[in-house]
Image (cartoon, helix red, strand yellow):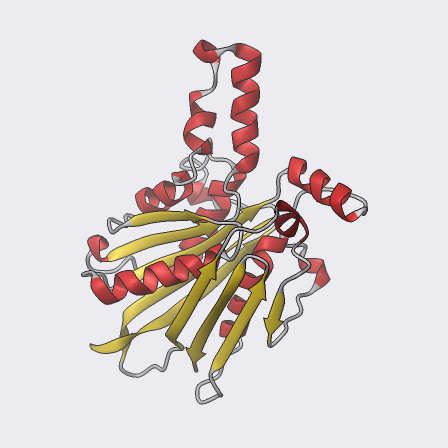
Length: 271
């Protein structure tokens, strides 16, 4: 089917990966040394990109948002450094502790040669990544952007949050990822959701907010299946992803705002 260039940015596909990742056989070798954070990013990104990598890999970028990045791998590397000394510290753990490692894996394995950017912010990193991707598609010679949110709870933060809220710590850390494929090209026979506006204004806030995230206010509010067991920082991204999955052409636009001690954010999607 012929394609026509449309002014605007469209959501071509969304995907999610929640819980313990199951790696397909064709990726086992490539991900044999990757940590869970990287595995989640690659699996969600692969599902959103689909089998068609596009005509020109240089015209697809990767934009990843996360609250703390691969914090568990950071702690593991520091443990190896303290226990074994600088000469015996794990180079694999060190390379994977870099926050942009997951975006690098995605770019290499999916042959994406556009910009690869990781945004680490404790507020709303997925919305921040979407905003960066939207700007890049508007101003750069890009046709597509793979936008992800990846979160893996560190046991250290789980314990700290439990102490702060006087609640029992979770039995195991929660983890997950979502991915959206944005495009400036659409098949003429299809009507895709269109990302028309996004705003992210963040400021510094007390650490307690980022541990509990109880002061956030969403309009309209959303609910997630408790069985999903997703990290608190991933919940807004997952809720948005599910709303896009359930969208029907011609429905009223999705206008969604969030406010909290760290600022405010808003997104509008026409369906």
